[in-house]
Length: 232
Image: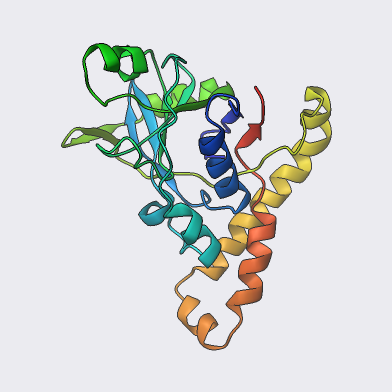
């Protein structure tokens, strides 16, 4: 969830099982909450930062442990077209951690077969696609940007307010009609609690031992946000 709207994802567990398991675990841990889209390159990608270093709120131990993991590059024949989710990484094909891109247009130079033809290692691992929220992506593309090196970045911080997921495929109308009110309330409660926990009084809170229970409550509340449905 962003202030510009929600973006819902579906995973490709048969294409990239290791990647899907890793990203989904980060979602369940609430690791993407308060992270941000550090890159919005119109017609190319909107990229989420690594949770280590990208989040506004500190990571707890479990989030840090999972966020620091590097995963094997699962390169497939799935094309990089609009709406595809693709892992970010460094030059090492097996260096992906938690940053990923949402394709805003076709990018065939990221596909495996093109990389093989060019004898390069520029392929990127596809692990899912956007199922809902293209209007939100359009709004992100219209934000003022600035260039820093090779990156086109939004001038404002585009924060991921919260994340949510479905354990099973819901009936769409039931999801919209019966869950949306609860979801909004939980998201609001999560955001309010997160602001309280990581406010300027955090140090005093930690000194008196109040934050541990608050963080647990925040983690529970914040498991509502980006919509992930396995097997799309």
